[in-house]
Amino acid sequence: MRLVLMLLPASILLVSCASNDVDSAVQAARAKASIDSLWTQYAVASDQRDAAAFERLFTQDATLSFQGSENLHGGKEIAAALAARFKDIDATRFRVVPEEMKASGTLAVQAGAFERGFIQADSQKTEYGRYVLVAERGPDKAWRIRRLAGFADSTK
Image 1: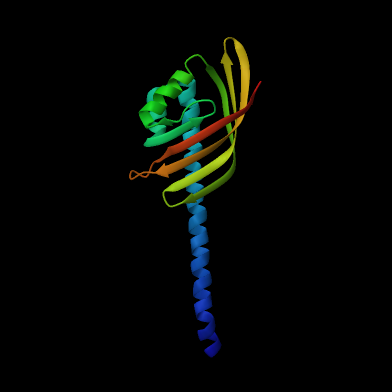
Image 2: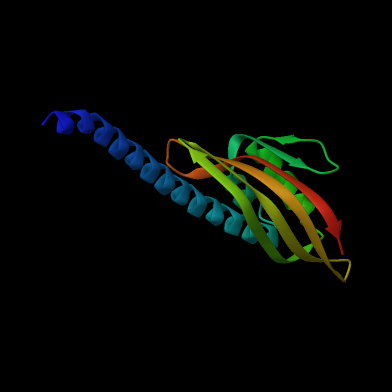
C-alpha cells in the first residue's frame, strides 16, 4: 500500500505531462492546417492580384518585410503593395516547404523555403527564397498573418 501511495504522485505527473504533450501536438497540427490554408489563399490572391483577398490574410497591425524594400505595416498598406507587386506578373506557381513550426496559445511561427513561378515581360521565371511567418489567432478564432518576412535567394 505504501508503494502505491508513493507511486501515485509520479503517475499523476506523468499523465498530466502526456496530456500537455498531446494538447500541444493537436494545437500545432491545427495551427499548421490554418497556415497551409493561408498560403493557399496567398497564392490565389497573387494570381488574381486581389487586394481585398490579401487584406483578409493579414492582421490590422501586421508587418511585411521583403528583401530590397521597406517594411510595410497594416493590412491595408500590405494589401495595396502586394496587389501592385503582382500587377505586371502572371503568377503561375507557388510552393512553400515548411522546415520548422512552433505553436503556443494564439501564436504560431513557421519558417522554410519558397518557390514562386511567374511570367514577367513574356519571360518565364522562378524565384527561390526563404521565409518566416508569424500567425496569430484572433478573437474570431481565425488565423491571420501577423508578420511575414521573405527573402529571395535567386531568380532564374
